[in-house]
Image 1 (cartoon, helix red, strand yellow):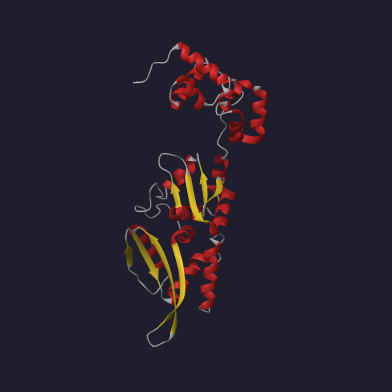
Image 2 (image 1 turned 180 degrees about the vertical axis):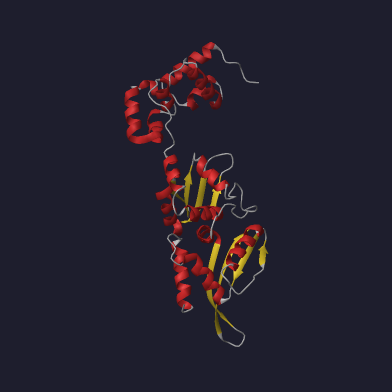
Amino acid sequence: MGKKWTKADYDKLISLKKDKLTWQKISTILHRTLQSCRKKYNILQKKNLAPYAADAYNAEEILSYYKKNGHTKTLERYGIYSIKYLKKKKLWKRTTNKNEKKVDDFLKHKHRWYWAGFIAADGCVLKNTNAVSIGLAKKDSSHLYKLKRILGGGVWDSGDKTDWKITGCNDLRNFLFGLNIVPRKSLILKPPASLKNDKITREFMRGYFDGDGCISSFVENTKRGYKYRRTSVSVLGTMEFLLWGRQQFEKLNICSHNKIGKSRNVYCLSYSKKEDVITILDWLYGDAGIYLDRKYKKYLEVKNLMNC
């Protein structure tokens, strides 16, 4: 058990901190751990027995800087307790989440069903929070900026990926939950429960296909030396979701009733008959108002190769 702190220790701690020594030097002088020194000093601050770093500045100066530069830069310049300092002086209070207005507009937007499908495929609803995120390869980063323009949130590069995230949006989370888009959905995703008509279903399926669908076209050599172009469309997902997806495709009067295959924990629904491929792709992308640019370009290439 560590040595008990005395009043002399507290006075010495406050004095050393006032002299602007680093926590490492303070802990060495007091023969305490760095974590212990910081924790005790924080307690003294809360009891108004030790000054905050922000106390060395004029409150109006901090507030002015905050209004111009925002939360993060203020903390970097004036210390991690500067916002609490303003709050204590009754100069600052938490404002309404700026994303809320964006979310309200998004929930009335004509493309909300598309983005719901895309989030169902490539998004993540974070457990026990009101945050939603999507991570894509950098080559598709422009797609996340489309979402940012109508829903807000932040977009940033992380290695070879680009991420989008929005926080503090209870209404958005409830909207997604209503479509069975829940945390850790990859192995349990169910079909959306509230798609009222075929137009909305088409939007949702295009979004899902842009996330977890694939258009494949390549030349294959037969045993007799002939060249044969093989083209297919496929979708990944849970068995329950893909059974529902197959029902939507069969409404298009396609020729095949394809089986759903399995690879490890993921199921796959695919079509390779020329007429089926074109029918499905035309239904998804014909006259579409929003899509993943890379996949739409592939759709046009396939139509051109098949002379459709």
